[in-house]
Length: 160
Image (cartoon, rainbow, N blue to C red; front, side):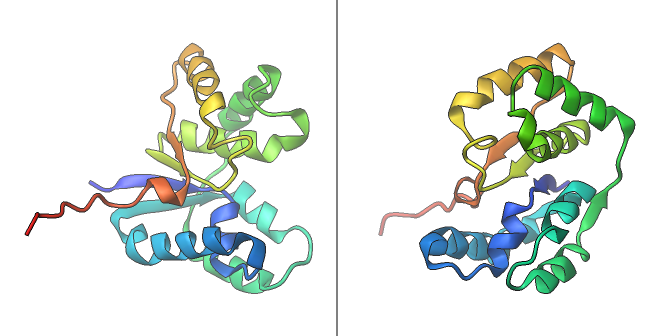
């Protein structure tokens, strides 16, 4: 059985991004998608799609076409309840409700990984323990919150 990966909005957007100041992240994201995504069951949520639908930015239509081909996890009232607990316990600032929703989706659906480039509010070693504590109080498992750099298949090299 394949492991599951939930994508927040940063991953699909970086697949189509062309900014020079994040070129390395874009390259890693594309490499991960091309070589690794086939090893996982990939999911997004309506929150992912909503974030990508907001605003007006280059290649938005391509990004939305891309995510429309992915499996979308259905909303559930319990996800909003989990999100509220996250916000009430200061896992994310109130203005960053989207990040709390991404975490709640990945947690509720027992995804193995939450893949993101948001290293401020999600893939942050200083937050992981707090997230685990809150999820343990809720009797929920915590997905591994990682960047694409951390989710490449291990390759065994034989010394020649």
